[in-house]
Image 1 (cartoon, one colour):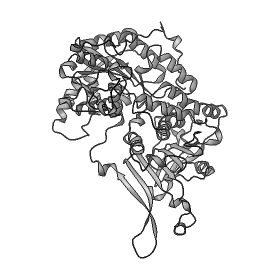
Image 2 (cartoon, one colour):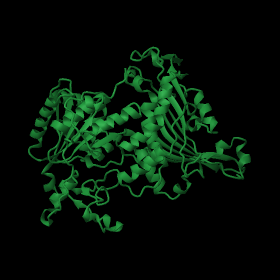
Image 3 (cartoon, one colour):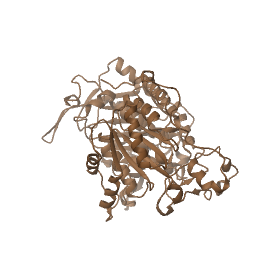
Image 4 (tube, rainbow, N blue to C red):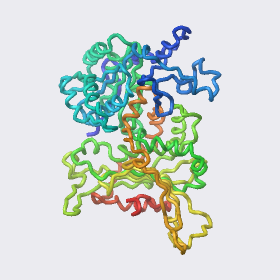
Length: 588
């Protein structure tokens, strides 16, 4: 049975007042106390020896930027852009000594916490990205001691970024800062006990508290209610990271947002989509807006279609209980792929400020027409024998109902009704149990008008089309397909790649997406997190389609485990005269 969002009016002792304290104290500073005022108004983490460490928007993380989020501050007025770089106020070691960072991972006994969140926090600590004074608490219903939690998470911690000799020492130091508290998610009494433990570790310093909700969405509101009333920071900031799914449709998402906002402000809610923290997604805006060769081409005049492709080479295989409640459209397309599409298609923002970027993303989403049945193909993988091995079908999974029609594959054609993108098909494709694991963005450009060399390509002009590919995972890369003459006396053309393979150009380990997003949440940088109106616009595109699919009980097209997906996806693309770019042998 699907997890339901419980109306917040049903929460015991619900109150419309905000229990979290104000995040900023905007009193006018006295000159002699200016540095202390800075640390209170815009707390930032410190880096060792004042390294200039930056958040994902390029601003130093250990500084107060007059550009990033202090528009109403009188000190920011009258500063020229060229002077902004010099207008950073660094926080001294003495200032940081008066504050602490307390991170509580709610749902600490779950797989996400053990496999992603704790390892990401350790990676940040290992590379000296966390402040000097910090503590981490795990909170869950499972009865564990501090030592049992440390033993559990130590098995997932690795010094993967480099192999410095002090790895084991750093790991031991990190684990000493990890503690555990067992309690019910709906118990204010248990959260009050957590608050007492946090205060004991904070030792009277000004506390900044971050809660990471690694729990099912049906208990989000209970946890937020209890944390806001009993475990919020009295003097510093309190922020909450919320994991997807953010509802099942427009109505449940709006209800969840309404309930959360009874206890939190929008500025305190960090809705995380880990795909926005991936290196190649981060690089998308840099590639477009900092390279003159690309920005003039970024429109319907030169781009024929854009493809967003997500494929996994494994099925649910024992983990189908959650997936069957949501399906591939809700799990991947409505959030990961749509967020990347919005970043790709947005107009140039006024600045790199979080609100300016999110404003442009919302404009893209509101310019798109809602999906209809004829715009979509759904599929479900079936059992298959290959190479002497038997691969199970989706409904062979013991955690999935035998008569389930939940799609494990979906392809969709979307259109943006604005001047830049009118008529350009944006194709999405996502599926499980396909022939390979990959996530990529493919930009296919238009044919060269009056191509002098079309005789050399034959009748299939698609093979002569330039294509820009951003491979998000695995083996991160950016490459551009161009036409090139093969060396020799004849005139033979070849399709070649101008290739930036990250592992060759940048041999250092690429940080995990959760590391970047956790660091941004600590710094209060919201650019890579989803705003409530952005979430509403995203759900409005998919909700009518999802309701129609479920009301009409439309059966998905079956495809063999390990194949390229259902045949219907090819016909969907062909309607717009498009060929899926990932099906060519040269990319395998």
